[in-house]
Amino acid sequence: MPLLDHFHAPLFPQRRWESFHARWAGTILDYLVARLRPPRFFAEMQIHLGTRIEAEFEKNGFVQESRNGTGGGLQLATSPPVTFVMPMVFPDDIEIQVLDGDESRRLLGVIELISPANKDREEHRRAFASKCLAYLQKGVGLIIIDTVTSRSGCLHNELVDIAGQPEAYHLPNSWDLYAVAYQPSRVDEQNQLRVWTSELSVGRALPTLPFALRDIGYLDIDFEETYTETRSHTGLAESDL
Image (cartoon, rainbow, N blue to C red; front, side, top):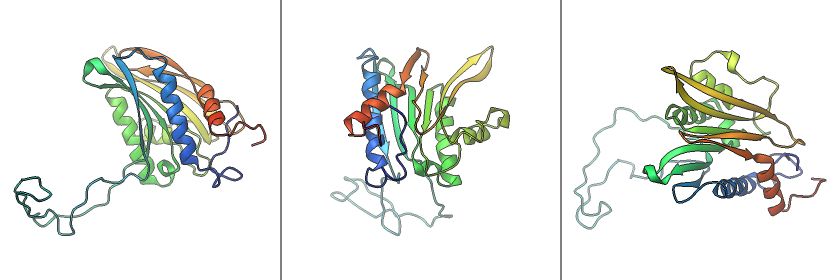
C-alpha cells in the first residue's frame, strides 16, 4: 500500500501519527523477530517521545536525607553552588534495536523512525544526528526512515555535516522524505561508511533496504510489507485515504 501523509488532514489530527508509528515500530519488531535466531539474537523496541531527564530534585539541589529517606539509607550531601545551568536537548526515540544475547547484550543494529520533534529546530536535528553518529562510531548498523511531512530538514545531511564530510554526500534538496541504511566498517586500516539511500513519496510504495548487523551480516527489511500490515491493523487499508 502506498505511503500516507500521517501529519496533515484528512488523517491528522483525527488519527494520531504517534499511535501509527508506535504500531509500525512494533510490526518491524515482529518482522525482525521472525527472522532472527533466538536466544542469541533478539530485538527490542524503544519509544520515548518528548524525552526529558527522568529525575527530579528540589529547587536547591540534593536534599539532606538519612536512614529512611529517599536516599535509601545513604547520607546524602547538600549540593554546592553550581557554576552554571544550561538547557539540554534529548531526541525523541522511536527505534527498534537488535542485540546479541551471547555478548552481554551487545548492540548490533538500530532502526529509527523519525518524529516531527527530531526535525523541528536546529538543536533537535543535531541531537538526533549526534545520537546516530554515536551508533555508527561503535560499528552499529543503522537505518533511518523519514516520513514526516510537517517539518523540513534532512537528518542525513545533518549527520554528514557533524561528521565533517563534504556536501557531496548530502541527499538532494528535492528529497523531502527518504530512508537511508548505513553500514560502518573498517577496511585497510580506514574507517568507512557504506550507505544505501531511497527517496520516499506520499502515494508510493516503501523500499526494501539492507539492515547491517554488526559483525554478523545483513537482513533485508521490506518496509512496504511492514507498513502495509500496520495500515491493515489500524484500519487504514482503504485505498481512498
